[in-house]
Image 1: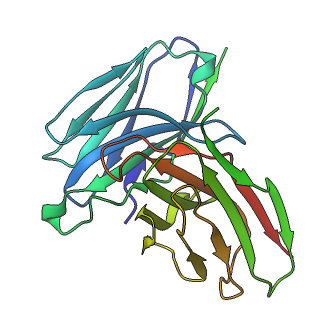
Image 2: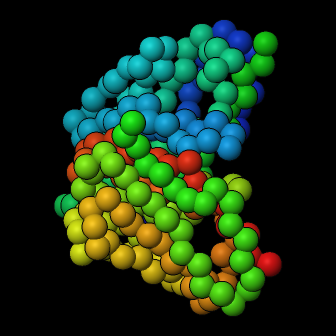
Length: 115
Length: 113
């Protein structure tokens, strides 16, 4: 079952901030975030593990709320290079009946940063 | 250079024919995955493999088959039973199945006419 991402698309001006959300109906072991530019392979951004860990990567950070089975990706002071489709990938917690060996992705959020 | 190689980049086949997509990695990764990407659908998991000679069905395995005879290789066969095979196919690998980043190949765009 795919995690649900929101919003589906967002348009920003350079320098603005954005938040992309990812939620699952299953208890999660970890959440991955990737960015894909048009015609290219997805590129890894970060992994968050069960435990409410928050991570950062340049001006991109993320949080993981395991109680709500949600993760959010924060993009601050956006740059033109941030444009692309962002995917969250989830691994379900074995205790919830899921397989924590299967990485399942959401439908993606298309981010467009304009000058 | 280490990485994942998918070939070919573009592939055309007639309806009713089986076709095999190649995926090779020299990263010494244990786990390999196949995803299908359609507009608006994200990445949907077809098959994945944790070790040689073992693989598991993903969410949309019907009409596909795989093999994992070597650690480096994880070919995907799109059979004639796949009702809508035209799509962009991505192969990925990781050191271990959980808790590590996945590295993706550049993809194969399959068009069935």
